[in-house]
Length: 203
Image 1: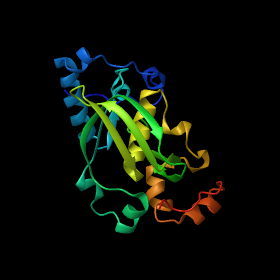
Image 2: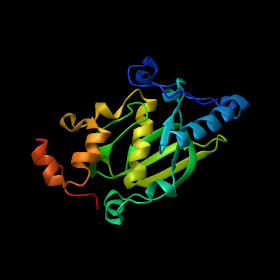
Image 3: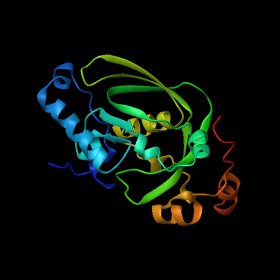
């Protein structure tokens, strides 16, 4: 059965999700849910999916940035975003802290706001303490696009969406992003959209 990805306006997307107990994590129900979320994320397709997005108010998310998603993207863009493949994994009951004071601004979308995107400032490096799908403690040190994915998914677990952090004048349809803005420089975006200083690209 394909899971329904809930869209903005659903109350569950604005609730702080509850932590999972060790007994729950190891249960067949949660293991089955993880498999369903993995399949739903891949089918969408997306690079992350949090349990609230499929109507479950649980501190659980799945993440994967596959090689095929990077194909056809200009290498200079991948370098600017510090984006590389990320193997499939699960984060449960995560605690996020910022590793560096620097931030980067890039366009971001969401499976719960289909067909839209906006520029979102995010920390360039984070540390996440969490449990994996077996309930084992994990520490994740992430930079660049992977750090952005983690921040996006953990926001979902705290009842937040990227529209709460976006530069509101940059909110647009994905079609118009592709048509008018995808190849534009930071300076052009800043000038034409009357945005605050976007700063230099991430190092």
